[in-house]
Image (cartoon, rainbow, N blue to C red; front, top):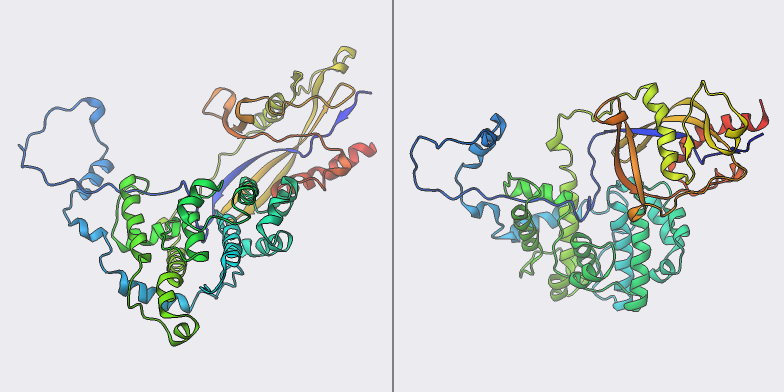
Length: 467
């Protein structure tokens, strides 16, 4: 009897659609930025007749309409913050009433009397929260943050951990590369900076893996009191409305305007109004130089969060096309061909097994199991799960770990059109291994994959028992 090989989980594909947009309370990503193209300067009056254009220069009606709108003349000063004092005062007064409303354990009052080690500890706490909050809502992050700080209370504790320990604690939070960046950053901070994150945004961004301009600004303003700006998706949204910026959101000019406005908000100013309680807790000089940058930045983020989704209403769902039974049947063979070293025979219901085929790896059964729904943050995934059995050989076939350029394999997408055999591909990290049946449930898997495994587990148990 040929040996049976048990994949870690049933084969599945996933379709996604957006739920209501509730972006993270901090950055979407340091690379997700926006930009502005200023209105063209007024040119000398030209003839009413146009020169003949080439066919490919014709513009669509929507493009023409956008061009006409962009020609509305206005002063460039409308996109600048000239006197931020009044805005700062109102913003801080509003923030004082809401900063504790969501019970975020990493959000603490700034204490200018802390020493270097204590400030570095605050920087570590803020850093962990910032990375967790990327693409993830506050309510989801809070329990993960609490468990993380219990397991790794200091940056040295984190630096001493293994990647498996870090990933196990991160399980269910998604985007595992964030966890690996935290580990790498902690190890570098311990090796080169005496276990402290740099106390200025420039050095932090340049030297700590995974920290970009936004994260460096947030950490250093909140923990170290440095007057540096932040511009995440929430602040971008807020400043664009406040400064009447209607322009391509990812152009350099828009970013320059919005970063400049964010910097103006945290620039040191005299005569900032403070409450009597604040005045009693800290000298006025320290209130101005160290207390407010972090509060202002957090207030901008908090206020910008309230605008999330307004620009997308109404919106339409992004739902993938239904995958046919024929297209689904191609998925196991395509995936296994990418992962297994020897060639593997595709499933053929009409094929009769022969002695010569016992040594070949072949798919002998494919059965649809059903759909598995998994909701993560603002993404709803539907996994089309299949139960797949492969046979042949005496031991599990060798896997092509690291056998692809950049240690990636194509992530296959199957539709009923759009390419040869309905396949399309995009890179994804390669991470595959054979796992004994009785150890799959305890393996380090994401929540969505666990759901897929549970949907096929009973079928495997019955197959093993021969029932």
